[in-house]
Length: 326
Ligand SMILES: Cc1ncc(C[n+]2csc(CCOP(=O)(O)OP(=O)(O)O)c2C)c(N)n1
Image (tube, rainbow, N blue to C red; front, side):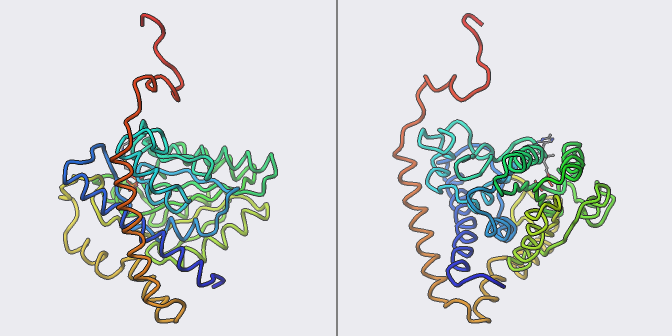
């Protein structure tokens, strides 16, 4: 493992921030201070952070409806994300996007996306740009097991493989698409095998284990960056919360969820690993926990104090507007 102590602490900070950010959202929604439709990423932190720890400024990421984790892992400012969720003008999409439209192109975050599977062709296009412009960058698409049944997934993989694009397709197999267990709708046990149709390399990682995701991503990116074409990386994971905030969770057993939450939490796994191997000190981890809470408190205060976008903003940043008299 080639990560320095600083890089490990940064990875932990990102995972802790994703978890704490979403816990904060839960509190704000319950208190009636925040509205909007939200899908939580808790439980899947090791995937976003394990992958993005390999990425730099030149690399791009396309995300999903469950996008908070990808945005934080790719370095989007947490304060701007919080303001976005409060619908304020200081939000990263000027308060007009909300949870499913958080984006920051300067950071290489091409956007969360409310359309299942729609980030996959976006990332493919960005990979084509990287190849044509010889930026040396790679493009990553995160998406769920459900999205791997969409035509856009198959069309993108076919094109990327044929053109040997520097694209990494990360399928977050969390066992469900909305309220339906994956095995009801996907006939293969491992979604990774779908790469075979496109003569593409594939890998499978334990998505609850940062170190396994980090290692497999390293192998995948070596392949992409050396011009050998795209890779499909399947991360086996579990979403701790429901499909959306407010999901009554009647389609899975409490025992199943508790087993994952108690025994396979990616943050607990990370902590156990780094402490056992004496890679960092426990005090560092607890200091980061406090700093994350302070940052979030400040983000909420700043967001609540910020203005809503003005009415004049209603026709800006959109592709088409109703004409005069329409
Ligand atoms: C094209 C399209 N079809 C259906 C939906 C409704 N929908 C939203 S999330 C979701 C399930 C997606 O499952 P998966 O891709 O496995 O991602 P997960 O929610 O498990 O992260 C569906 C069907 C949508 N938003 N877009």
